[in-house]
Length: 224
Image (cartoon, rainbow, N blue to C red):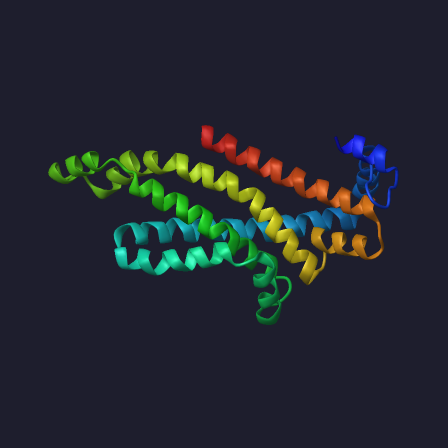
C-alpha cells in the first residue's frame, strides 16, 4: 500500500517510497550520530517505561489494599489518560530540563495503563483461594507467589505490550518538541524544517523497529 501510494503521488517531497527510505536509512546508519541518537532515545524511553512499571506495581498493591488510596489514585489516572500528550509536553517545557522531558512524558503515559491492568488483575484474583489461605494461615509470601502473581501475569503482560508502542509515540513526540541533544525526535524535527520527507520516514521506521523489537523481547520473556 505504501509503495502504491508513493507511485501514485510520484513526489518524494510528499511521500517517499520504501526503496528511498531504505536507502536513506542505510546512509544514516553509517553516521556515528545516528547510533548516538538511537541510544539516547532508547535510554530515555526505556527509563520512563521502567520507572512507570515499577511505580505501577507498587501503586496497584497499595490501591488493592486500601479503598481510600484507590479513590484518590483513580481520578488522577483518568485525568492523565484524558489530557493530550502535547499539553503535558508544553507544561514540562516550563518545569523541567529538556533532557528529562521525554522520560517524564513516557512515565506519565505508561503509568495509568500498567496500573489499571494490574489493579484489575488483583481484583479478579480468586477470592475462594484467598479465603482458603486465610483459614490455613498460608504465609503472605506463598500467597503472592502462588496466587497473586499467576492471576496478575496475563494482565501485566498485556499492559506492558500495549504500553511499549505508546511509550515510543509519546517519548519521541516529546523529543520533537523539546529537541534534546542526540534524539530521534530532534532529527525528525530538523527533517521537517528542511522538508526532508525521506528522513522523516526513515527516522519513523527506526522508531517502529525499536518498538517492535522491545515488544518481541517482552513477549518472549512472558512466555517463559
